[in-house]
Image (cartoon, rainbow, N blue to C red; front, side, top):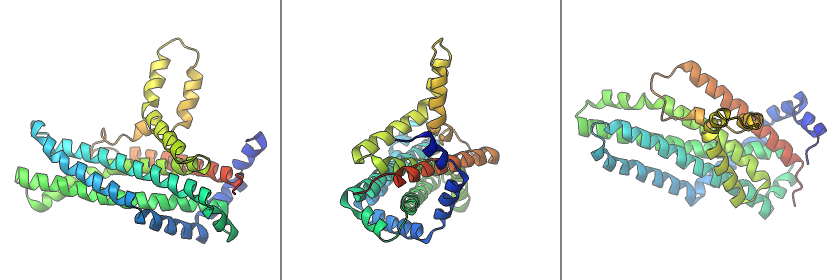
Length: 287
């Protein structure tokens, strides 16, 4: 269990200094590269890519009922598909990467080779984020190609101007999607330190749903006369605010200050979660 002393040690400057130094540790980089290779070898990675590509291609069939909003519907379905596919890949791969290796004894082998526990957690996180980024880029490219093909073949638009016209509005939306993926990877890695695969998947699913509905429940309870508003506010602070990263509502005219603020939030939240995960893993007894 955590005591006040442990919490103070976790939040100290020295602890965060060690945490920052491990990011540039060569052992963490080696673990990250091996994690990427391991995930890319798994059939799950290619299943996610193929499933996402199939869903994007099937969105062309639904444009028959959009009454002139073909491009908008394909874009929204594509962004949602990329989000769900990458989050599923992150949660499943994180559970397998840490939980299964703890059960099989691979973690003990790494620790016996003078690899610190912080380097293992950070390496696993950056490896998972790198694999998710590969899926993210692949599906993002496919979405641009689907939008481009629809605009050129269906609307008889010019080739090069149409490519720019379809790719440019996606940049802020895909930026928010990737920030969600980064936060989700940190949460999935932190959960997999102590929880088995099924429990970690349930935990990640709960956090994603709660993060998208936190603002709704806060406003709902704030309008009543209940006495649990302080508790809801505390819950809202520690649950990731995925509602603010909703890419569907973002347009191409979104301000750079808004994107910078969300990027800062994602970086701080991810750093905090990884720091907590490292401290928990340091106190975990590996067998």
